[in-house]
Length: 195
Image (tube, rainbow, N blue to C red; front, side, top):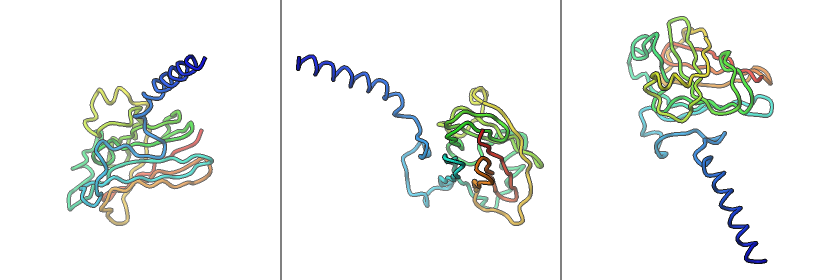
């Protein structure tokens, strides 16, 4: 009987390992995914950053890399109008919602998504993509095939230039937040709603 119990325990353990193993590489809700090993952020040209906000009983989190202006002309030049932009540097900018949500008008289920923009001088298209763990470029047909949907957000000028790309999250109510993207002379506010 003891031998059968040991065999049964071994079989159950193996079965659990097979079920859990594929999830080992999944991104946890509180951790940002980066392709490379963590390094000293002060030694990276575009260091990783994140922001989070609590809506009701769950937290929305955005992960991105923050490039600097460094005297360059950004919007319409370094970031061309009408072309997909990863809204940062390095890895794709990613967002986690722990509940059914609406990002820039795009309905999503709980989980991680990447987001990118197609900027213009007065309005950005905000694109939600189902693949969160990927390098930020290229945003080609293979990447775009996984787009969940596209919303729009007005672009406005900042009162003064913003050197470091910054993405911030702020709660407006228990079910509504704003994701604010600021860089160089541009600010865009993207609504995030709990559904």
